[in-house]
Length: 87
Image 1 (cartoon, helix red, strand yellow):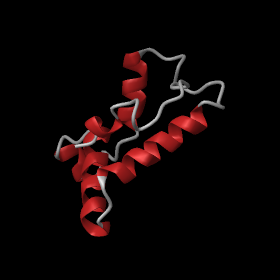
Image 2 (cartoon, rainbow, N blue to C red; image 1 turned 180 degrees about the horizontal axis):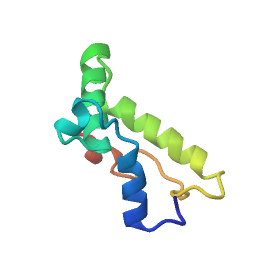
Image 3 (tube, rainbow, N blue to C red; image 1 turned 90 degrees about the horizontal axis):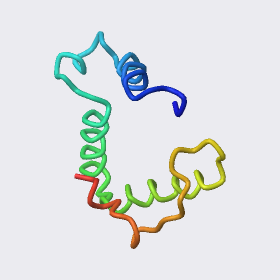
């Protein structure tokens, strides 16, 4: 969505939400919804925030080889505050 404005991207993402379910009634956004899913996953699997951060790091590493990726800078768990963004 690099070609779209922030408003256009936000509208497109919001249109993808399931408006016929409780998601809309609960005023959930995608970040809020996936945050709830992550917390449930932690509870059910005993995974940690570090495990989720490692997935984010893997995705960033793949992005370095994608010419149209949004985030292409190399990083590591030590050099980025990935864990500070996971609540």
